Length: 283
Ligand code: DGL
Image 1: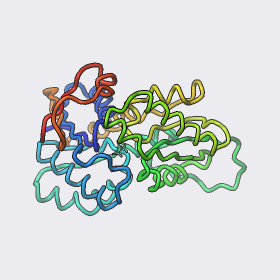
Image 2: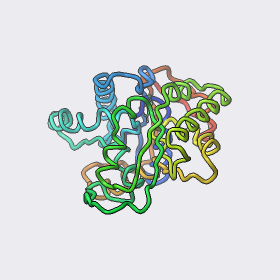
Image 3: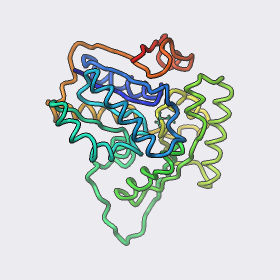
């Protein structure tokens, strides 16, 4: 019984943290696919296969609901898995299981509109264009999921994406803060130059970047609002569970942290973010 949280590595801990705050008595199993991280530069088919394998491991470990706490997996694989794999898998398992992502709640938070909303294609003049900057992995950027889905819902938001090819890998490896700070400043600078001015709001569209959100805050102009993906996701999952009692989240407050990679304590960036040492077990 419980909620599975999946990421290629440590980034999903940012979502796990917000989920636990909302659902303190639920049982959580976190799985980091550290044997295969990072996902962001991989071909789509590989991301789909790895994400399916991660979900299967979490369902086998007892999760009823898996949260893909990884933009790359959610952008590239989620719809495919929901349509082509989950229905048969659920039938074979003989119990209700589901996988949900983090992009839908983030887009709802960014637009202030429910997912079902479709923009009227009006001819009116747009009074004010809200510029949204998104930092993400190359695979998420290439999927254009944020641009496409936001454009369907709101004509008043223009999305600019900045791919950060090595950042998730370096966060995962526990790179020096100086190196990470320089990379973040370079990416913020690239985005601002491309837009021609700072964005009105920003999304850290890779869960790894939340681990160093303070560096993004420092590099962006003072007070640039960051849409907080982990909170948006935790709120959406809480409300989903209320509407779907068939996915029992458990009630003993159990926490397990598993990895496909090397078990043991995680790097110093995790410790700084988490507030204490965190160790993963081998799955
Ligand atoms: N944390 C992930 C994301 O949100 C994946 C990063 C990666 O593995 O490249 O996109």
